[in-house]
Image (cartoon, rainbow, N blue to C red; front, side, top):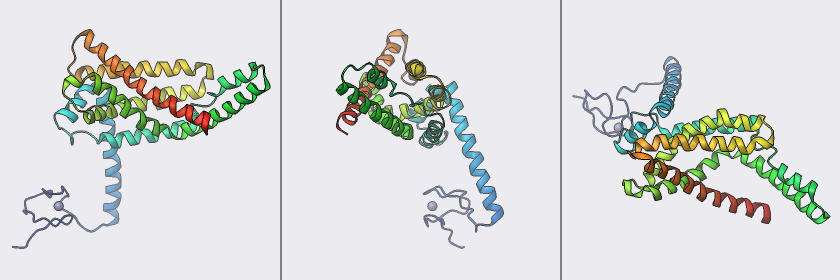
Length: 264
Ligand SMILES: [Zn+2]
């Protein structure tokens, strides 16, 4: 009897195995050929698409079930890897941002102040600020993905602090928030981001608020099932957690912006 070993990790295999029990690689590995390569390419492509789209659909119709199954019940393989999905969505965000320039014109506040300034000194100061803000906007547009990675840990902190009694640790709250962020970022990129780019600067605040309201409603809807919340008081606490997370991130954002605008 010939000894059968996994070609990936060399562990001994039973001939009946379809996959290596140690590393999970298929036992049917053969040399690459062109036909196989083309098949693999489309297979990977269509599978990725299908898996990602199914997860997105689930995040629309039953986000609480996704969170419970993935985080609490340990059904990790059932779903398309949510971290990969988030990276895919953030790729879309950066792409859409490079087309629509959602931050463009946000420096108009300083330009208005500049026009109203009575002294030359103030005028010059506002001109510098407008210039810096315009540069910051340009940088932010390129780094839209970075914002999510700063926002998520702070938002998760808010949820963890408010719902400590529900027994989930900080990492679990962070995973939950990152999963929901995939869907929210996709909606932002496809709907709110183009609106920010197309509509005049005065409407930026309202579009931002509409986006925020949509996020809070969706998160309430998802967390209600995830944390098994009941009644108005519990739902109100989701809003409190949201506001707390936003306060954390607003503080960090303001400090970062002030440091940039004043010292750099
Ligand atoms: Zn193996």
